Image (cartoon, rainbow, N blue to C red; front, top):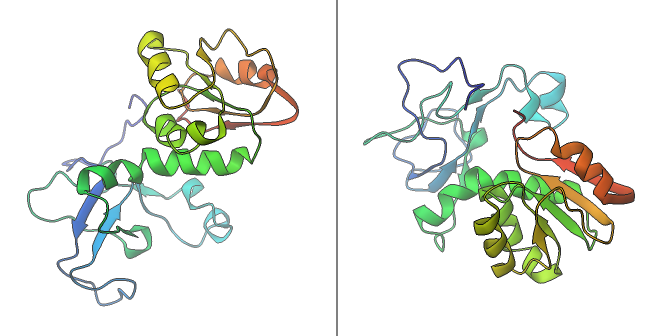
Length: 210
């Protein structure tokens, strides 16, 4: 959070909101009153710049963020959100299960898609985004997991989820990776990941840079 130096003040924090729609603006067409929705970190973009028109709204220079430049979800009553950045939440998720998907889940899913379909995947940094991807990917595909910090706890966690190998990032696996995802905000992991992937491999920087 060190780089988030210009919050809207006063501010209601909270960037993973799950709630039920109580009222609608005149232009809302996607939802109706009573719908259950989630509101993620990215809360508004201009819709007109080259990034927005290319489907890369997360790069919009005018973007606003839930719980930082927009009021978030830690209100006892209501929160206001742009319909473009709300997601329908299925009933089979509890609020506690759905909320992390609106940040860690989105980051992990987007990173995994960009990593491609290679069989050998390395994960650098085993926090919330990584383990939510690992629980659906590593355990079924038998991929690899690296972690640079909290090693003892992270190693057991990764292996319990089905990782074939877990260890320090300075110890690359014996075989080259098809892809690597860096979730930890550590710039020094980029050259390590590049060395770990084979020819034509992909390195995805999924973490917020520090």
